[in-house]
Length: 160
Image (cartoon, rainbow, N blue to C red; front, side):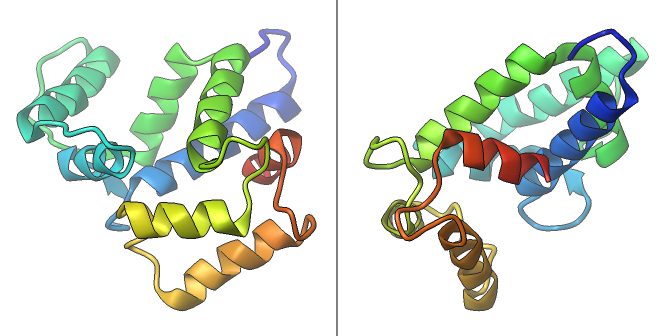
C-alpha cells in the first residue's frame, strides 16, 4: 500500500482485507480460527494439521501484542491490523492474482461458470453456501458476460 496518506486507497485496502476475512470465516462466526484455516487449505488441496493452524493463529495474534496468547481466533479488527502491518499493495495484487489463478480452473484467463461449478464439485470451497447464495455468485460472475470475468474485472469486483 502506498504511504502517501491517500485515505481513499486506505479505505479500499481495508474493504478488500475485510472481504478476505469474511471469505476465510467459513462458519460465519465473525472470527477466524484453526478450523477455518484448515477448511481453506483443504479447498485448495492442502492438508493443514489443526495444531499448525492453531500455531498460525497464535503467532499472528502474538505479533500484534508481542506477548504469548491463549486466544484461538482472530477477529476482523485483528485481521485488518495484521494485514496492514504485513501486506502492501504489491502483495495484495499478488494475492489477488493467486486467488484468481486458483479459481480459474481451466487456466484460460477467465473465471467462468464452468470454473466455479468445477471448484464446487471438486472441493468444499462453496459448502457453506446454500443454492441461492451460490446462484448469486454465478449471477455476479455472468454480469460481466457469458464467458465469465478476467483478472481486471475480478480485482474490481473484490475491491467493491
